[in-house]
Length: 90
Image 1 (cartoon, rainbow, N blue to C red):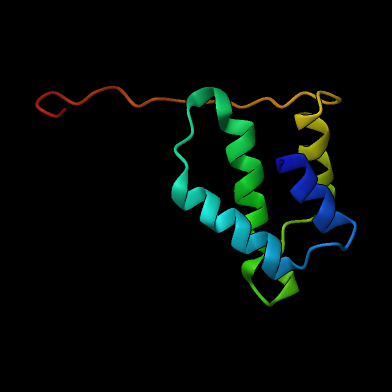
Image 2 (image 1 turned 135 degrees about the horizontal axis):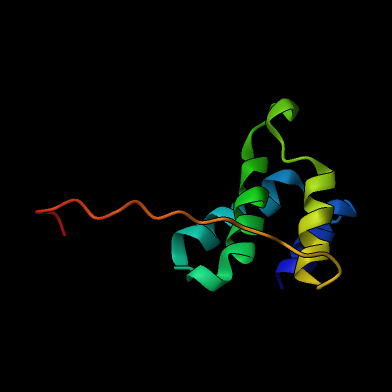
């Protein structure tokens, strides 16, 4: 469904408002695991289309790249760093 939403926006079948509303609702409802970072990042990129000012839009090239990663056509590398635990905190 995510690739379809992304493509629908890129093809002009969904407006910025429609796709960003769907993405925002999805982010509010879902909890993503570490192995779902590509999915979360793609939905977050779509949610950023909510602003009326085009200067703040996610670039279409980025949305195409994320789609290609979701389809396995390109690799998506993410580096995650964890801070060391501080004594006395949980």
